[in-house]
Image (tube, rainbow, N blue to C red; front, side):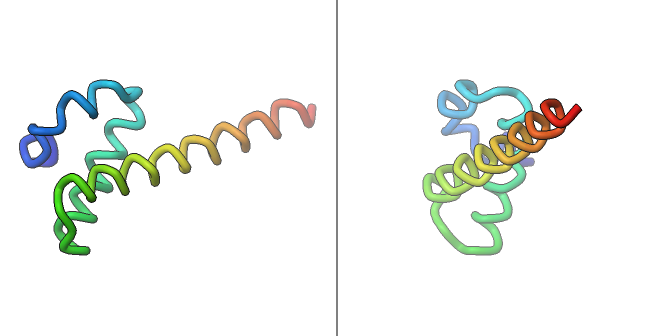
Length: 68
Protein backbone atom coordinates (compact mmCIF):
# COMPACT_ATOMS: atom_id res chain seq x y z
CA UNK A 1 0.00 0.00 0.00
CA UNK A 2 2.84 2.41 0.81
CA UNK A 3 4.16 2.46 -2.74
CA UNK A 4 0.73 3.27 -4.15
CA UNK A 5 0.11 5.93 -1.50
CA UNK A 6 3.36 7.72 -2.37
CA UNK A 7 3.50 7.02 -6.12
CA UNK A 8 3.73 10.77 -6.84
CA UNK A 9 7.08 10.81 -5.02
CA UNK A 10 8.58 7.91 -6.96
CA UNK A 11 11.35 10.13 -8.41
CA UNK A 12 12.53 11.00 -4.90
CA UNK A 13 12.23 7.43 -3.66
CA UNK A 14 14.12 5.96 -6.61
CA UNK A 15 17.15 8.08 -5.71
CA UNK A 16 17.48 6.25 -2.39
CA UNK A 17 19.24 2.98 -1.62
CA UNK A 18 16.85 0.03 -1.63
CA UNK A 19 17.16 -0.60 2.11
CA UNK A 20 16.58 3.07 2.91
CA UNK A 21 13.64 3.26 0.47
CA UNK A 22 11.88 0.39 2.27
CA UNK A 23 12.25 2.18 5.60
CA UNK A 24 11.17 5.49 4.09
CA UNK A 25 7.93 4.00 2.78
CA UNK A 26 7.20 2.42 6.15
CA UNK A 27 7.93 5.59 8.11
CA UNK A 28 6.14 7.85 5.62
CA UNK A 29 2.95 5.86 5.92
CA UNK A 30 3.15 6.06 9.71
CA UNK A 31 3.75 9.82 9.63
CA UNK A 32 0.98 10.40 7.09
CA UNK A 33 -1.65 8.28 8.82
CA UNK A 34 -0.87 8.82 12.50
CA UNK A 35 0.61 12.33 12.58
CA UNK A 36 -1.84 13.73 10.02
CA UNK A 37 0.82 15.53 8.00
CA UNK A 38 0.93 16.03 4.23
CA UNK A 39 2.43 13.38 1.97
CA UNK A 40 5.34 15.67 1.14
CA UNK A 41 6.06 16.30 4.82
CA UNK A 42 5.71 12.59 5.58
CA UNK A 43 8.26 11.75 2.87
CA UNK A 44 10.69 14.41 4.13
CA UNK A 45 10.42 13.25 7.73
CA UNK A 46 10.69 9.60 6.73
CA UNK A 47 13.82 10.19 4.64
CA UNK A 48 15.46 12.01 7.54
CA UNK A 49 14.55 9.24 10.00
CA UNK A 50 15.68 6.43 7.69
CA UNK A 51 18.98 8.14 6.87
CA UNK A 52 19.67 8.68 10.59
CA UNK A 53 18.93 5.02 11.34
CA UNK A 54 21.23 3.96 8.50
CA UNK A 55 24.01 6.25 9.78
CA UNK A 56 23.67 4.93 13.35
CA UNK A 57 23.77 1.37 12.01
CA UNK A 58 26.88 2.11 9.93
CA UNK A 59 28.63 3.76 12.89
CA UNK A 60 27.86 0.74 15.05
CA UNK A 61 29.21 -1.66 12.42
CA UNK A 62 32.35 0.47 11.99
CA UNK A 63 32.87 0.56 15.75
CA UNK A 64 32.71 -3.21 16.11
CA UNK A 65 34.87 -3.73 13.03
CA UNK A 66 37.68 -1.62 14.51
CA UNK A 67 37.44 -3.18 18.01
CA UNK A 68 38.91 -6.51 16.89
